[in-house]
Length: 310
Image (tube, rainbow, N blue to C red; front, top):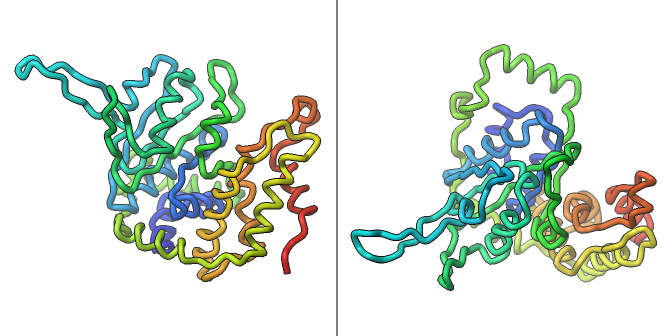
């Protein structure tokens, strides 16, 4: 299934294999993703293309400063002919939800996704409404533009299983992008490029069940624990990784091992997925940020210092 998905995505997306691998790991671990990258590096196109490889529904919300919570979750509407209120579902009721430029909307609208991401439901007037299964939020944000944006609070960042940086492609890949556009690639209709569904919700459910069966030895659990706890005692970290972050890293490592066709997790699996799984859960001291320190630099140092199990 994974090989087929990669083949279909490759019909449109060029040079983002690492991003796609992280995306698929989070999908298999049943979590949400935050994609961060400058404009024009195919964040939205990647989501649309990946959704087209599944037989599922995809919804998109363009987050803007005037967006209201009810525009996301839905609202009660008065029906005059029945003299009653009915719930009109919002765009969040889908399988893959693309929350485009999520940091452009105020905190009260961002908070509309808190219950959605954690409980997979929407509660209106005390009545819960379950979301479809599978359900995944894929949010995008621009890391270089701060005017008119609202940074996500730590509580919401912690609900994303992974934060993936989408960078510029290599030279050959970028030239291939130009060649495909020159040949008439239509970014607004990925199916015109031959992308077709190659996986169903049942396939995804089976893959997730197999991921859950991946074996994790006690030494690996201890290794993950030490990495997480090390973030809390670092002198340049103001807020370290929570226990939820350790659980997220475990799930991602199991998915990464499964994608590597292994039935057990190795320390290299943990290392490979540690930064996407933990970078957004670390808040640095202001002095460290002024000196140019990033969460990735902190994690690189911790991964070097924490003893690796043999």
